Length: 415
Ligand SMILES: Cc1cc2nc3c(=O)[nH]c(=O)nc-3n(C[C@H](O)[C@H](O)[C@H](O)COP(=O)(O)OP(=O)(O)OC[C@H]3O[C@@H](n4cnc5c(N)ncnc54)[C@H](O)[C@@H]3O)c2cc1C
Image (cartoon, helix red, strand yellow):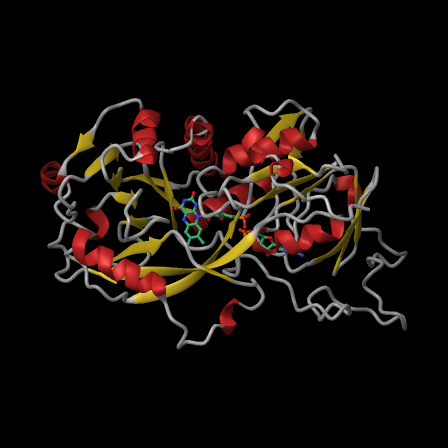
């Protein structure tokens, strides 16, 4: 996705953003691909001197890269939850700035990017993460089963369970948000290059990036390659414990349209500490498809992003069974089989915290990865932090939880 942080100064723009597509690497205008005397980049000829278009098979046996917008990564679709409630204080402390920066983007582009719906966190009372969410909100709005179904008639809690209400939360319109960041990035002088795949990165005082369309030289580089990041940074001698997961994105039809207090009027929700779904389940009101609520398991099956479509259709879908059982108990106004199913990718770290750090050996290369299914809402602050790391500035937040070296054995054969 796009990690936006634009810093104006003397009319110039420093930017840590990269695009949501095939390659995007931050380049100063003076660092365009090297061109020959005809204005063609030096990888646009094959060994026999024949010219290739960057839209062609790239001559390195690589498939065509993605054009914007694309749905092969993690950031596509129309909706993502944004909330203040977080079990971890090191994320909840970033949320006020995230809300502010998303609002700033709305104002700059004249686009509505956010709808406030509220969110309920469902779980057993005294569950440590649920308690931490309650503390992160600084208010004490805890609903029992009766209070929850009075307030939100579509929801049922099991005996003794509670719901913590985050009234600041809502839905970010994801596709629109990506377009807005790209627009502002261009307005500030940035260049987006889609349909161009990064093939190799040579570290050094000047980093050399070879793509299917050219060779770029840059003093600083930020890599945010999503589900491809793990394989990608191996060439830089890093073994990051990143696991791409294939996520079933499921939409569920109301049994009686408009009667269940669900549909478009529902709040978002997420579960914590339910024994039937230890990884959690989350849901959003109807946005993408009228009358269908998005309810997903916050987990999936390990996959290779290049082979995610090769899973046989007969493969077991444990996620659907978990979701069906949850829906029949907690959202009885919905049908118990999904009406629409799509797929998306998470890239998980073992502790589900992000990786935001400089390469341990090449400090002018910064890596942002492992967003573990909760990175969208935090993108404005993530962009700012990546920018600060890249410029050698003191990061605005405590970075201890995002360090590469928290994982043992990451430094393999760094060149
Ligand atoms: C179903 C689903 C629901 C989610 N819900 C929420 C939510 O409610 N709230 C929330 O905060 N977060 C949510 N997330 C998580 C959030 O969407 C992700 O954390 C975030 O989008 C990750 O962005 P990314 O930049 O890491 O990956 P991507 O957006 O996939 O970007 C990586 C990009 O790198 C490009 N790339 C890779 N290799 C190369 C190469 N060699 N050359 C050039 N380009 C390359 C890819 O083409 C891709 O465009 C959800 C995710 C999913 C899948």
